[in-house]
Image (cartoon, rainbow, N blue to C red; front, side, top):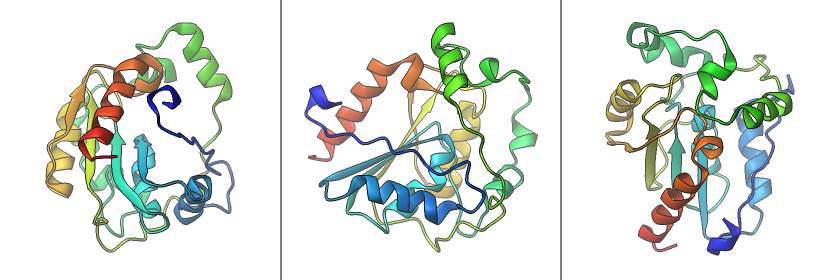
Length: 197
């Protein structure tokens, strides 16, 4: 995004640290933001549990959730699946990580993503989402039409029920930053422009 005039930071979350939970994830993001302003927080997938917490720690002007989990106040990440009725709605199952997360990513890039991946600690995933209400920050949702983990109908329903938002849509599987980077960058750039940032 630098060539578009945006200063981007992509912090590593302490996801493989058994002592770290959602507050520590949000602290890591806030530390990476530092003194940057204005701030657009973009979160993908489970990052939907971290992004709202960042809004309490940094001067966030816009939050964008991509192929996201959308937490409810007090809900743990582990409880998300049952609380959203995921098993009742999503019928196809993919045992292979490439088929589930990277079906539209070039094979060599998917292999590199798997090689660089880190294990997600489950030690604190039963802790409740520590927010009483969604932050008063403009929020955009972007779903991916070929997402096999969070299919469009599921994301549309949860977004409507939990945030009263109709998601925007783009082509791609669960990892559009790898499969459709140009289109994703265009969308994020347009959101920032619409927000006057």
